[in-house]
Length: 85
Image 1: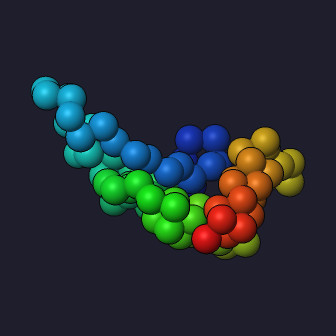
Image 2: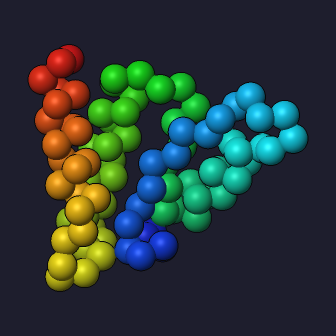
């Protein structure tokens, strides 16, 4: 997964009821470019799967030698979701 935007991949949950703002189309650009994952339907399982996909990119494409606060938060979210599954 290519990592743009400060070296962090992103998880998108577009608002599908915006009328003229096609958020899905805009989010899909990130997915096509390889730096984002789009969730059209949000559930515990889909969020857990997507979060694990994002965490897996760390070993493939480390952003830097310094960890941002996003990764500890993602790991905590993943652990919490796994505990509720």
